[in-house]
Image (cartoon, rainbow, N blue to C red; front, side, top):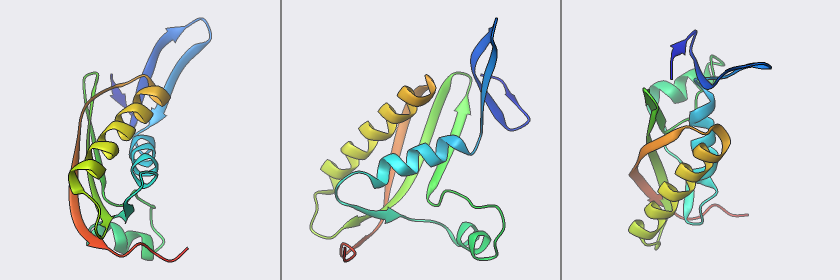
Length: 126
């Protein structure tokens, strides 16, 4: 994948043109997939990202870092999980869901999904 103007090409040029996605799309896909897993309370973000959001600057996917190297996508996630859940089970489900969602939506190969448990919390009231 070539990286020009902060986009990733996900298809070769064809008679209809080419397809490119902005670099911010992959972290959003990963965050939505991770937070859809039962046992995940929320994504964890660092101070810089939270400050940017509060200041109204570019909105970033908190707790997600994506690196693209050639055709491989590497994802690092920091999540807050629900108290009394099995960390290994939840982490495996996050890895599987993120990998499948990115591959299905973009056709890009996901080399790895690293899950960092930033904290545990009570599930928010619904």
